[in-house]
Figure 1: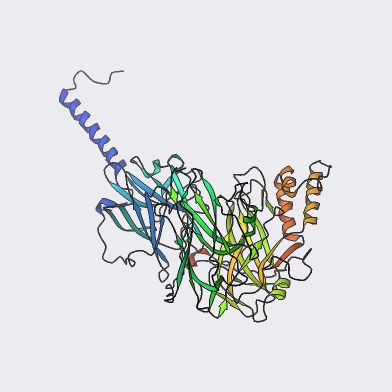
Figure 2: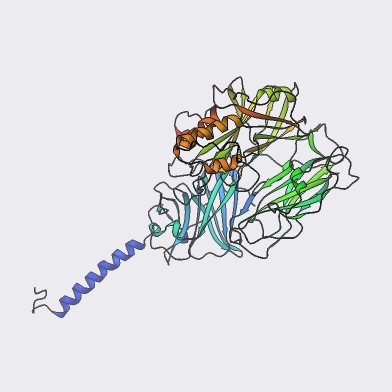
Length: 601
């Protein structure tokens, strides 16, 4: 085939060549032009109409253990918006910040800053089920400022709590799983980004905080620090470090009126949570100990230090007691020893990092009107309760029955002013509801709840778990790979009721083991030969076994632990108790764009 005639002139060929080259350039330029919905950061101009929040922002949290990313934010409840400031110490070609249900990289709500080698862009985006990123057609993150400063690059933007965009995360009370990552290469298009191919991290944040000022402490308040003794953080992902501290022998009764965290600078993203426990009051001597809480050589008496005195988790603020109440410490009949427990989360396996983090107690000798108390709700720490493996969502429920509250609480009731929820690694959510006359009346969480009729009420604590990454069942217990379902409620006046928890009746659980084993052709009963943990481990786990276990937990009688502060049960019959009846449940809170009413399951 002849392409060119011998009569074609060089001038004609030159014109054709440059015409084709021009067309190619148009295509290339078009491919690099700003995405239609993204903000060209280089052309961003300050908007005088933007309503900036008061600075500095009151809430801050480091995202990564090396300190390259710091998150700060403020909340406008009037406009239902969150103002977010992200500082990047060393920005190369961009940054990804997002939120997802459990910290997954898939199906996440994202905001991305990226460049194509010449210009930088900012946009609202989302990731699909494979981590591939796309620009959102509805841009709900409003960029307010992008600026390079001496200590890093700052992004300031805002977004509503709820955007009515099905691809966006709804910011609600409780834990928000924030994912983050840095871009080391330019992107010709945001569609070239896949979160599974870059290094990403996750951090848990309590984003929505109470809209109230901090109380002023009285002038006579003293402080006591309960701190880790210059610990070298182990270069492993998870460490629970225990330390015993003795109170002064002559310490009279005081009231703790506030406590706060003390975090060693540079370790803000490694110190995950801290708890201070009181040891048993009758414990006169306790060996000094500073080491792993899981060490088999630790003193056995450390297990007698279980009464929570103070608890802090990453991102939490100082804890204030109400003006009429304080938590008693010191004096006759009180404990002489405290146990500090620090959870270090070191995913980068950093070595040689020293730490002296802990809790600072603020206390006064001027006693307030009421002694405050801490009551444990939820499930007893026992392997009797377990979560099957490979579960996307599995619920365990603990009960504080009306029989226990009727027996142990005063006729005038109690005032619950705070709540602290706790699970281990498989936990995804905790919710405690107040039930009266079979009807759910209120959610007992961090807000103030008062009832003069708590005596005779039921408190139900429901925990949600995910064990998709586990091949064996997860039993209840104190170990980090075991599970808990706890709500520490803070209340006054203090009563002798220290623990109001439950677990499934052991006899009915043995019937479950026998039934499942026979269903799978194993007629040999090992019920009395091995412990419950081994019985769970020996089961053949399939969907049927999990469904029957779930049914057992929701129908079988329970064993109630209605315990006094001496760890003894209140008088009464607490075995084989019927499950509390709930005939009406609270509707789920919905934002205006979310449609009609829906109930919690």
